[in-house]
Image 1 (tube, rainbow, N blue to C red):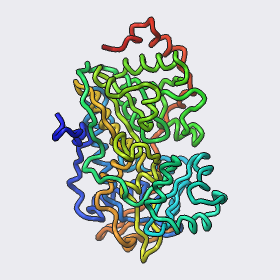
Image 2: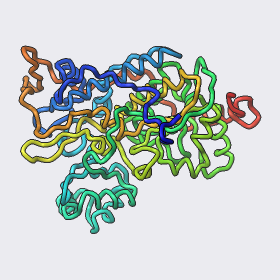
Image 3: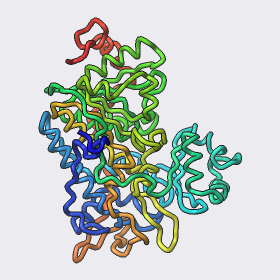
Image 4: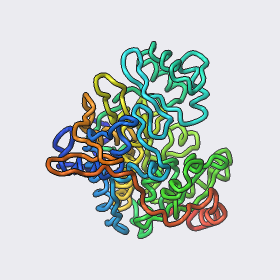
Length: 452
């Protein structure tokens, strides 16, 4: 099954169809899609023109959206989504905009090391607390001149190695792999029975995983969102409308992995599932006694959306959408030696989420389970293609009143603002379905023994 004893790197789904990608700036159609996506408005220097350079990214998102439509139609409702527009949904809801070498969300920055560039991402309180250990001195988290000076004396490798030990999301430029596909199969599982309304258990949080499962929900899957008791999805603390967009309709249950009863309940739920989507580092599942490979052998597919993958030396690295995108090679080089700049908003998340939805949909349509992964870095590298170039191309972008437009031959295409899909209802509160789900998947229920 695996050539030379190695896992098959050909993904089950998300086979790219990007025939229109012809150059570093993309074809005319790609450039028009990029301008219309809302993501171009989020890309470029603060106060300056948006960048037309990564137009190929629009083609990647169209390809992944096409896969989602094809695969969901095999077992449920055909889900049609504007792939490029997904890149700007969070910014549309929160009214954020481009900031150049600072991420749109504000938590990540490019910093020059002694021999290159790194991205330092501080989205969590524990990251801020670890900053003195990273740079070797006590410094306020907002004192970037001192932080830059300290990191400027260190090599990229030294910075990334220390950050990895500290559990911080820090990366060098393009220091991830460069796969041809956003997903890969890690192991093949046993036979499974297709379900008209498949059960998807969502163990993920934040953006990529919830986006993937929201699209599977739209196709007709039943989605159960599992959160830690006392540690709900961190996205609940952000913009409520964005959380609702990604999680409406999902049944919500909380578990405490320190509780033997909760671990037993979770295992029964996972065995009953058609697909499990998770986004934690491998050691989290190991500590909980959960084996994706064992579940796949029993017929439950497993889809992992981590920052750097489940295997290899990078498996324990922490990463989020902004830094993982840069690790995958998706960033802009500043003009005339200027600072690097971010592409869109935490862009690895919507790329990986859309690709994972295609993978998950195909797994649900198949008759055999598998363990798959869509790492944020892999998805970014696939989507970036050849979009990273020297120089900052802005010659084709001109001002138009208070906005911008791209000049494409004789045509002028307005650079659209970010937008988001309609939000039909509010998402359920954490733990809303605790009682009902424990009854349904309890030890005495037929569902509690698993589907098969």
